[in-house]
Image 1: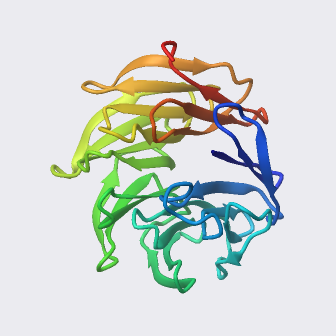
Image 2 (image 1 turned 120 degrees about the vertical axis):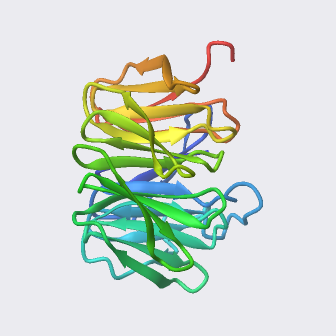
Length: 280
């Protein structure tokens, strides 16, 4: 199953690989910044449980199940734009990136806010959890990424190196590396053990809007850009091995299926594309 979101306020569910529509999710009245699946959605989680979460530019955050076309809960209290969100690996918590220069952690069991952290000097754009759930990374328009200890809520590492806003952030499944992508067209790979950037990739000719690690070993990284392309990079060396071209406008988001068979890109041209290897 695939979920897409739109600046129209609508979200939609689609079959994979046929890309047939399943359901239209109606509730947001402004641009939807992200929609994410619960880690156990379509696996061990009941279809009537909180299977998805979405956020929008008006500060609304809605929770959905897989059977209804309207939200079943709302997380209230965000006065400014919520740009991105991410489930904690346990599925019990939701991390939210806010344009009030903060990020928040919500307990989905109680629908209560348990952390509200400040530290960035400009809007927080993206958020990602480490694979073991102990730390969280945020990226912001101040050109920095930060690592936070979830037990104490304190910032434990400042990732300062981009020349402008940082839009993309993702942890490698190896638990050691983290990638950030910025408005400066660069992707930086950080080693958490060394607490420093170990690779800088001149990835695109326009801003890097989103990035995603391959979910098994982290030896592949996929980046999306406003240069209308997405690219696949391989480690060691982070050399480009494939450019996914075909969109007529900015590529806004990218994702990879858990079985590694499909990559999806979503664009400002109002289309999404599902990609598979030539051997499939």
